Amino acid sequence: MRVRNEVPPGTADNYQSLNTFVLGLILEAATKTPFHVYTSRKLWSKIGAMSDGFYYSGHKFTEPCAAGAFNATAEDYARVGWMMVATNCRRTHQRLGWSSFTIQVG
Image (cartoon, rainbow, N blue to C red; front, top):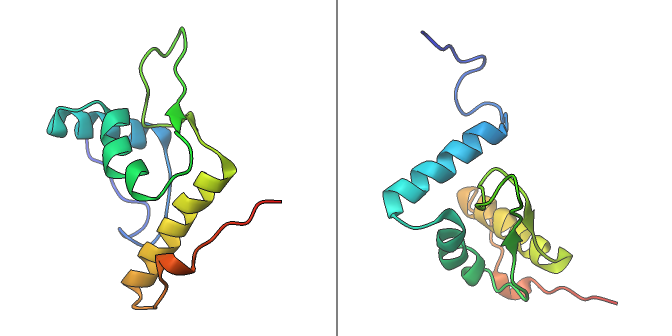
């Protein structure tokens, strides 16, 4: 079976849950750590989250999955968004510091 790219690599985004799910499995195999533990240690604890986030699991899906069902407060989701903005600024050599990020509620 041969797979062709629809567009040149790096020119478009095309999110698919299956790709994220498989990436989570690869990450678990490579690190020998459950996905939710690894992301907590390497991501969540680094962004200054105010609350614990969690991956939903239930009777059909008993283990957390990288493809979705992540829950967090709006404030902490904003921190994730800020991290993405800051990362993009580093790529484009713009200046934007974590110290300029505050969230006011109410």
